[in-house]
Length: 194
Image 1 (cartoon, rainbow, N blue to C red):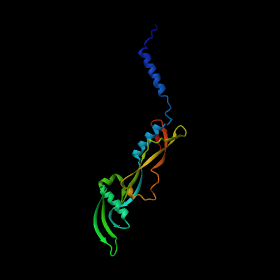
Image 2 (tube, helix red, strand yellow; image 1 turned 30 degrees about the horizontal axis):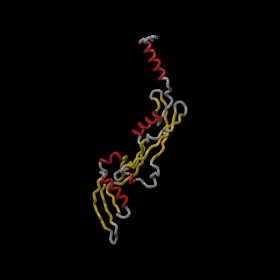
Image 3 (cartoon, rainbow, N blue to C red; image 1 turned 180 degrees about the vertical axis):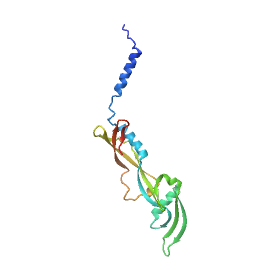
Image 4 (cartoon, one colour; image 1 turned 135 degrees about the vertical axis):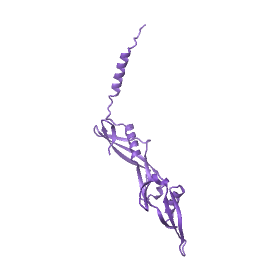
């Protein structure tokens, strides 16, 4: 019968330190997909990607025939509480099936997250925003020890203001590919270069 000797606590501490030092020897300068995706997700929270369009507010005239799509878009916003529409005047054109409506359109507090800037009669609003598609892998290219690129897929999501987006600017794809440049810093690791 062979008796194995139990290692002393001192030996266990030394073996633990050796294991930790070997685990810590992995090269921090090698970027991996998990690091890149986490950094991009954090970057997008602080620097969102979106499409914008200008809309009018205040006193607006709509022709029932020629502005029906635009009027529907404003009525959609009114229904969901982003604007409040007050009918000021309705006029039927003489010998015509067309009518002209004059509304005063007010932006409500609910529209604040979507309004980027405004003048007395126009506002720039977000029509689409893009989110990181985590189901797709990132394409990584490391060039040198301190630089890398990661190309990811961003999926397009529409806001309630999407009806105002110009048709020629609307993409036929529901996503975009975006490349982010990374730099390695000894203190903070891999970060997106601005």
